[in-house]
Length: 143
Image 1 (cartoon, rainbow, N blue to C red):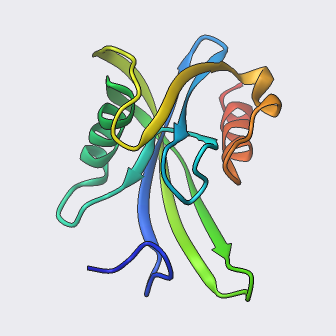
Image 2 (cartoon, rainbow, N blue to C red; image 1 turned 180 degrees about the horizontal axis):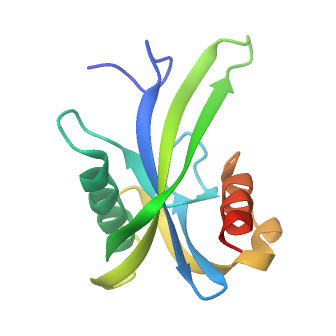
């Protein structure tokens, strides 16, 4: 089993852009990297698991919500070097726009908190690198 920290190759992950009017669903990370920072719900895919199944599972585990996929939103790459410049984390994240179909909002799995956050107030919280850009670029394409 390879580690997410100092990986031999990039780690594949999924994320969900879930909107409720002018608010977006965010998860406060409960684990490193970025413990305590806010991000889109999501996580790593498992071997043999289709990406579409991974996003449904990850959203349910982190937020308690059941969702359906609306469409592919974006592909995002996150490289995180350590103090010496070595690649400590390398993720390729496939983000989907999703719509809530059921469940009850509650933090779970590796999330410390989960909330609906006004999109216009994203600058007021500590977001993981690239999250704001992903949201802004996606919303600009939807207009």
